[in-house]
Image 1 (cartoon, rainbow, N blue to C red):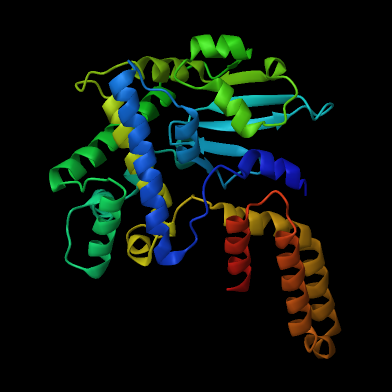
Image 2: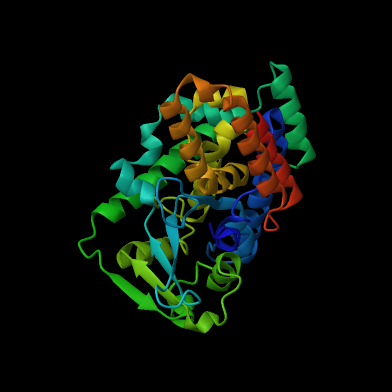
Length: 345
C-alpha cells in the first residue's frame, strides 16, 4: 500500500466526523464556511467558481471504484492517474458525476421527496420541539447560520432536484462521449469556473511541474454547459448561481447526514460518503487482508485445536492495525484518534 499516494489524494478531501452526536457541530461549521464562500462570490463576482475553499468543503472520495475518484459536490467527478512508465507524470480526468451512470437515474430522485424535506429540515429547520433541535439551533446561532423557514426548505430541495435533473438530462442528451486533452493554461481559459491551480495543488501536491500535467475532459459538452450556467444569474433558468448554491447545500446535507447523528440516519440510512477515518482503516486493512485470510484458513483446516488461538490472533491483528495507524505520518492526530476508535469499537 502506497501510503504517500493515499495522503496526496485523500488526506484533505473531507474532515473526520465520526463523532456520533458530535458530528453536527463540525458539519455546521463547514456549512457556514460554504455559505460564506458562496455569498462572497455572489456579492463580488459575476459568476460561480469552485475556489480552493469550496473544493475543501464539497470533495468526497467516491467509494464504488478501485481508482482514485473524487466526487466534487455532485457537479462532476475527478480522477487522478499516473503514467504506467513514469509515476511522476500525472493526469487529471474530469467526467460528469459517476453517480449518473451508476444509478441510471437522477440520484436525488432515488430518495423519497418527503425524506429530503425532513432531512433538510432536521439540519436547517427552525423547529425547536426536542432537546436535539434546541441544541442544533444554538449551534446554528453560534456559527452564524439562520434557520430555514418551511418555505425556504421546500425551495432549496426543489431547486436542488431541478438542477440535478437538468445536469442529468444534459449528460444523456450528448452524443459525443470522447475526451479532449488540455494543458493547464488552456483549461484555465476554457473553464474558468474551476480553479485549476487549486485542484493541482490540492490533489497532486508533489507534482514537479504543473505545466506538464495533462487535463482530460470527458463529455466536453457537459462541461461547456456547466461553465455557461456558472455565469448565469437569472432565477428563471434551471441552473444559475443561486440554484448552484442551494444544490451544494442540499447535496452536502444528503451526502454527510448519515454520519452526523442517529436521527438523520433514520431518514437516510445509506450514503456513499466516506470519512477519512473510514478510509484510513480500510486502506490499512488492505495490508492485513492476506494475513487475516491465512489465519482463517489455518483455523478452518486444523479444526478445534486451533480455535482456542482465535482470540489471541484477533487481538494481535487489532494491535498491529492500531500501531500501523498510530505510526502513519500522513495522518493528523484527529484522524488517527477517530480511526483507532473505529478499530476498537
